[in-house]
Image (cartoon, rainbow over all chains, first blue to last red; front, side):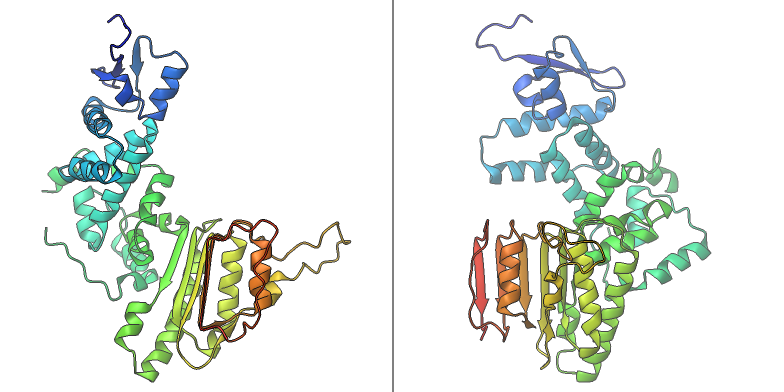
Length: 163
Length: 222
């Protein structure tokens, strides 16, 4: 598309599984990685994002569009972020934090990290393992030894993991 | 269910260490350290979190009036902090918070904890004690120049570098006006200074070569 004065510039982003996405430059430059590419003049054609898959990139772009449409109002931005992350499953959250790190988007990174911490809070070891798919590679003896060494972390803790 | 839950593997454990440590830093110390039991990937991550908050407020509240329990809780607290500091690996500290009921047997340990925090360029330090009738005295020796065999250089080298300290709070600690003045003089980034219930302050001169102080709170300091 020929860029004319007054026409918003659109960038094309390519995921590592070769999906193409169009996104307004004004939204995409929330990513410092992308902004640097634009500033260096590398954004003429397609911007390859080798560390992000299509599913995650689609989600990140939804976030970019959503958050950049909100005027400078930190409260509203925060509630958008909360809502945006509320329905994400645990795998998606881990993918998002990796993508946010690669794209250098501190606001998304902080929000996703906070969300992951929040879901881990007050949960039992078993619950966190199940929900995040963490494979327990300890032998029963090793696990007992680690538990014994960190006994204090289990004292006075009430976990809430019925769901 | 195992298959469905595990999906194509353990995504979160594949995150780089620094990201996982950032996430763990958002949890309480206890919660963060409990993740060591998840799997071998997690065993040491919590030891790198830059925030150490040893707050025993809630357990102290439960046993408020029981002196015997308070005593045993006090020595358990000291053991707890000591064991965490022994295994902790972060080279810098954003936050170091001590909150318990002082007992004279804890004196040396507290001095060591402060050394630990200062040697890791702590940014926010809180030393809070519950009322117990006896007080910990903040050691002014922290400000003494190093006494080494090396010939005297242009300036005496301090035992610690206090240059990262931004927030400092003492409650129920005896801290002299000289110590406070030395902090003001040696902490160019200090923004907040809070001293509650310290008996040794009589005349305080608030000045420093590059004072950034925004909040000074002295409460019951006579």
